[in-house]
Length: 466
Image 1 (cartoon, one colour):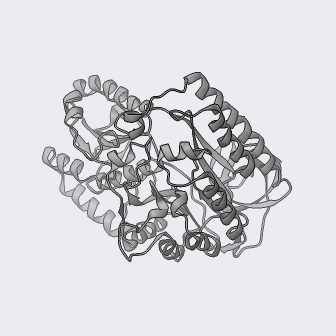
Image 2 (image 1 turned 30 degrees about the vertical axis):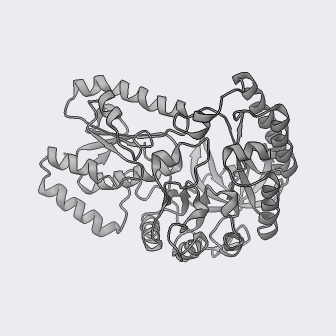
Image 3 (image 1 turned 135 degrees about the vertical axis):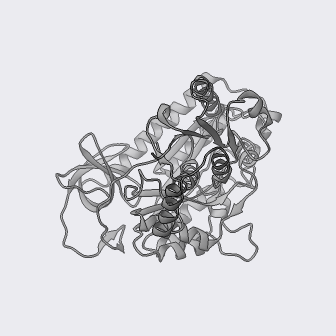
């Protein structure tokens, strides 16, 4: 009987990409996924530390696993991700002595596999199964519950970060910036496409710094051109970018390459220059204005997504108002909004006082939230009556759910099985966060993706690591 594994994952898309790599290694030695944690022979926690709340959530989960491990000492428990970090885990080992394996972020899973091989006598059948899967599926083996099921998959292209913003703990936890070779990324994407994936999301802490650690090497635009040429792939996205490194070469690649979607995620974080200096962001509000203008000039149909932190140490009402004003002025498509919380070990936590009250942080948060709702409702209304192309991801509450090239969420009703299809949908209703409509049949042949030609794809459903 095959042994089983279970993943508990929190945090960013990069964590899902990292977990998939580890799951691949477990699959190679005969393990299979189970949705039930209590039934698993191996439990892997993929953790996040971007906020203290995320870290505390991981610790609480580990505390809850302690009695389960006591009841079943043969269960293997592994912890990976940013809670572990790259600078040793002595404190974690002391606090959670029942954990069998600790793994750094962006691990390949070999430490866990090595532990299991020491503790288990793998059968010849399991070894042959692993070899057969490797031969059939190529460079990357999706977990069994995702194979032929996954529509969109994250692919990490640069690990770590060498641009230390004063509020961010990630460089300390994930280490210095390391770009993956173009050929390695392309091989992973080809393998994913061969197993049914239609869209890839290229990931990096600062994704537009891809290649900066390799003097004279390829940059993100060069990588996009290579990935765009992979047969069977329908769509490419990338995130998250930094304003300082979003070059015209990258923007032209987005505009020119048919599979790269017109969506740019480039955070401003704050609209006041003094706050930006304290954040160590390296640009001004006017620099960001000029970047948005350039993006819209080069990619006219673009959607721009943004990150904002409110209540940064020392942020006054007047400084917050500048953030509000620039967001009102630029009318961006989406905002990922966060209230500042100090992270131990960061520059802002060591040197600055968290002097904005929680009540005021919440007021500022809701103020921008209300503003963005108005902007989004107005921008989404422009799609009323239009026909848009939707990559269908899944069925939710009886309706199909998918996204446009600009990553606008669309729901529609249709009796056919359309999972994984590129479907033309006429928009009949718009709201601030999504749209809905009806599928419009088109003749067989090439279909249009945001004005760009792409090939029709077969139907596939969506599942993620549990």
